[in-house]
Amino acid sequence: MNLLLSSNQHNIHQHITITGSKSESNRALLLQALYPTISIENLSNSDDSQVMQKGLQVHNGTVDIHHAGTAMRFLTAFFATQEGRDVVLTGSQRMTERPIKILVDALGQLGADITYEKNEGYPPLKIKGKKITKHQVSLAANVSSQYISALLLVAPTLENGLELTLEGKITSVPYIKMTLALLEEIGVSTSFNGNVISVNPLAKISEKTLVVESDWSSASYFYSIASLVEVGSEISIASYKATSLQGDSVLQEIYKQFGVETSFNKNVVKLKKVKEIPQETVINIDLANAPDIAQTIAVSCFGLGLKCELSGLHTLKIKETDRLEALKTELTKLGANISVTNKELFLEPSEIIKEKIAIDTYNDHRMAMAFAPLALRVPIVINDAEVVSKSYPDFWKDMESLKIKVQG
Ligand SMILES: O=C(O)C1=C[C@@H](OP(=O)(O)O)[C@@H](O)[C@H](O)C1
Ligand SMILES: C=C(OP(=O)(O)O)C(=O)O
Image (cartoon, protein in one colour):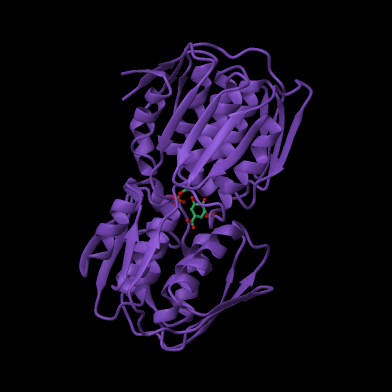
């Protein structure tokens, strides 16, 4: 499905309710499988949470998690520590190219039985669940925090808990803290000092409701829209918490540089465009702690004609697609002067945006959603627009409610 987006709106006043965070949801689902007295509210309706839910129910056979990185990594640790279960865990073609050796080796150090079905270091994995009694493990922390979160989530069910020693510069740190915060919320005792994380065992918990906050990464597209419309425009989004577990809530700070101010009224966040940004503004941000909003920010800068220097992007090459190359290719099609390294992106200020360019999305929901706000500047085509369902199935419906014309 290719969509043509266009808009003659410059002043927007609209309210949107965004689905639950897929990161929080997939952690909550795994914890619920381990501690069935947990109930979950505001669960994400994303594909990634659906495949997680289905996967957790399998005892023997093949589990296909499609494009869901968190499901792949979290379920690897889950099945490896579930005695009696025997599964092959696989995913989309892209998932078989996303590395998992660091996690498999760490679980191997603990005594798990995991083998590679095809290429060493990559899914699919054959996993025979075992009782794990060892409790100390070291692993590299500079490639993906999901390996660490995966181990932490199963840690309280291990007889002796877990002590993780993290090697190298820790990346995507807020996601590790989110995992620890959710463990604490259900009563697990944890500590994170320097490069060592400890989790104590916990046999069972009493009834507990986990209320998932709506997704801040999804909110980024509305920040981008708010930055591109007239001063005075307002978009309100629900349902958020003033103290978020999600690192992408840093959007509140970041978008001040784009003239967008954030305020809270209970669980509703109001994004208001309060001022125009001078053309000489340079946006310079290290996104090592918030990699999922890199595409949004790069496109906002392009739409506003601002110079942009983004760093800390070393994880982008192993996500749904090589996001650095994808951004370079697609922004260049629109007329941008952009260069990338393995961990940085540099965009020169540009005065024009080419019209009716068809943006390829590379099976990456964030490519589709990050480019959509440009419809406020020029008509734009988003190819394979259904990809958004990985995290935000209602995205196009919500774009229409902002009076952006969406034509199939
Ligand atoms: O733990 C999580 O829920 C996530 C961690 C991040 O991945 P990396 O740690 O691989 O950067 C992020 O990009 C992903 O969308 C979700
Ligand atoms: C990187 C992402 O997801 P995952 O790694 O869980 O596939 C994402 O949603 O941007």
